[in-house]
Length: 528
Image (cartoon, rainbow, N blue to C red; front, top):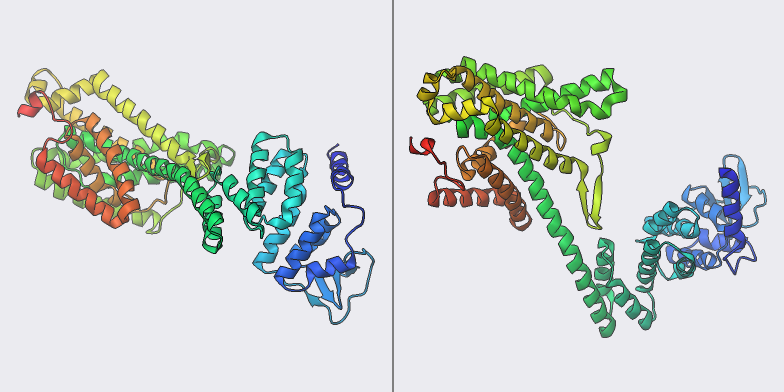
C-alpha cells in the first residue's frame, strides 16, 4: 500500500501542476548544470528547475553523490561499471578525458535546495515542512516559480505563512527594486532569527535609499521580537541555575543555618550524590538496558542515601565533638573534603565520567523560534520545587522536624523534655547531607561528574544561606533564585568572571547593610 501511494504521488507530481513539463532534461542542459562556474551552473539549474522537470531529481541526486563526470560538453552518471549519459539516459562509454564534477559548498546548497523544492508539494506535511526549513537559507529568485506554486496549493495555514516568508526571502535578492521593497515589508512580520541575519546581510549590500530604509525598519521589528526570546532565555537560564543553587544550599541551610555547623565538605556531598547516580546508571546499562530510561527513579533515593550515610558518619565521628567551635569545625570539614575527593579519585579515577539523560529528558520544547527550553532543565526546576516542599513539610509537620526546631532553639530545654539531642543532631545532619546528594543527582543531568564537582558550588551555597538569612528556608529560596538570575544577567553584560566578582561585591555590600540577611531569625534563637 505504501509503495502504491508513493508511485501515485510520483505520477501526480510528474503529470499535474507543472505546466512546462513537456520535455525531459536534455544532455545540453545536464552539461550546463554540471560544468562551468558556480554562477553559471546555478543559473542553468534554476532554468531547468523552473520547468518543474522531475527528471532533474535523479541527476541532482547523482551530483550530490559525486557520481557525475564531464567531457566535451556532455555529462555522465557513473555508478560502478555502469555509465549513463545524463539527459538522454543512454548507456555510454566514459571518455578517457572525463573529469570529476567538483561541487563547492555554495553549489551543494543550491543542489540540496533544488531537491527540497520538489518536495514542497509532497502529500506528507512533515516532508513539506522539512523542505521549507532546508530552503530557508538557500532560497533565491530561481526558486520563485516553485514557491509560488507551492503556496497556491498549500492548505496548512502555518506552512502557507512560512512559504510566503520564504518567497519574500527569495525576492529580497531580486534586481527589481519594487520586488525588494515588497519583500522587505513582508519580512518585517517574521520572528525567525535567520530572517534577521538575512536582512542585516542585504542591508549592508543595498544601495537604494528607499529599499534600505524599508530593510532597516524590518530588521528593527524582527530584532525587537527576537529580543524578547533572548530576555526570556536569560530568565529561564537564571531560574535553572537558581534551582541548582537551591538544591545545593537547602542541605546547607539545615547543617549551617539550623545547626550552626560550617561544613566545608558540603560540596563533596553533592559530588557523592552525582557519583551514586552514575553508578546506578552503570548498573542499569549493564543489567537492565531495557529499563535504562527509568534509572533516574532508582538514582534519586540512591543519591540521597549515599550522601546521608556519609554525612551521618561525619557527624558521629568528627563533628559531634566540635559543636560550638566554628573554627575547628571549618578546618576539620575542609580536611574531610580533601579525603573524600582523594577517595573518589582512587576508586573511580581523576577523569570526569558522563551521566546520560534518559530519552524523556533529552531535547526540549520550543517556545519561540530563538528560545528552546531543555527538558532536563525543566525537570530540575520541578525537582527542586518538590524537594523544597518535602523539606518544608518535614521541618514543620513531622516529629523529627519538631525535635530539630526544639534542639535548635533551646538544646538544654529539649534534653530536659526527654529529647535525645545527640540522635537528633545525627538525623538533622544526615538529612542536610542527603539533600545535598539529591542536588548532586540533579547536577549529573546537566554536566559531567568529577571529583572536583562540589568545589564550584560550596562558596555559592554559603552565599545563598547567608544572604537568605541563617536558618530561614524561605530566604534560601529567594536568595538562590535571585542569585541565579542576577548571575546570568551580569554574564550577558560583563562575562562570567566579572559577573562572579560583581555578585560577590553586591552580597558583601548587602550583608554590611543587613547582617541578618533577607529574612531575620525570630524567636528565642534570635535572642541567644
